[in-house]
Amino acid sequence: MERILRLAFALAAVAAVGHPAFAADKLNLAISQKGFWDSVAAYFAIERGYTKEEGLDVSYSWTSGGSETVQAVATRSVDMAIGTGFVGVIAAYSKGVPVRIIATHAAGAPEIFWYVRADSPVKSMADLAGKTLAYSRPGSTTHTVAIIVARKLNPPPKLISTGGVPATRTQVMSGQIDAGWSTPPFVLDLVRKGEARIVFRGAEVKELATQTIRVSVASANALKTKRDVVRRIVKSYDDALRWMYGKPDESTAKSTSTALSGRLLSSINARRIGVSAGLSRAFSTELWQGNVLMYPRSRASRRSLMLRRADAVV
Image (cartoon, rainbow, N blue to C red; front, top):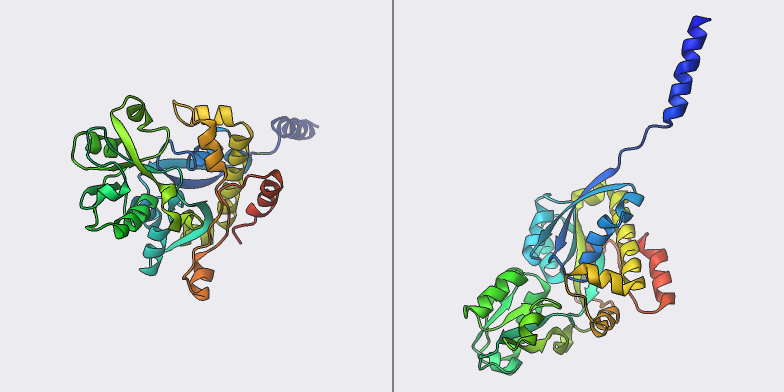
């Protein structure tokens, strides 16, 4: 009888506690350029609990984009990276770096702009001939834009890697370089105060308007061993995007200390995917693991995207 009572108490204790919780799958994530509108979706996915809803325990770090981001994935410091330059990934892959594209991130570069000090003689893109022109890191979006601009000018400007927005701002305002790069709302305080001037925007580089410019990547090992985990982080990223565009006032206010303007939001929202040409079928099949838009404008398109994005990593 005593043994039966002990067993009954043990069963009752198990029932009270319930089933043991399953451990969340861990994922290390690199996010390019802290505070940028397109990359902050990954941060919101974590902050708002969308990753937890997918059973993920995500740790993250910020990078300056381009080669720095790809290097973090290539060395397995992280499993996956959000929003890095497409050209840099292609260059790394062609050299045998074990990196795979799992989603396209953005087309064109309409939000990026280049600026100079207010007392600079540079008034337009054409005036940058023979000057110094900044970009973040090799293989980044800003690097791609800078290369195209340089080809248009004679003599071409000297291209200089300046890292992130804060470091670039310091170098411009201290006179170390002629033109620096940024994205709203950063540096707009200097423009408003008349201390800096915008000389051209990424939207002026028409060659990139319909081209995939940034992508999200995973290490070949992570994609092989954590394929379902990668699929779920893409899903949580979608959930964050849906919230951001569903509640633009709240999301833009939280993305930076200064809220983005409605006009800028509309500009970002109007982006479209671009298909990057020039890759062989075999090359593309191995490299590309999915094909995902940053976010389309219409509700119908968003619904279609939501249905297929979760299956983008195949």
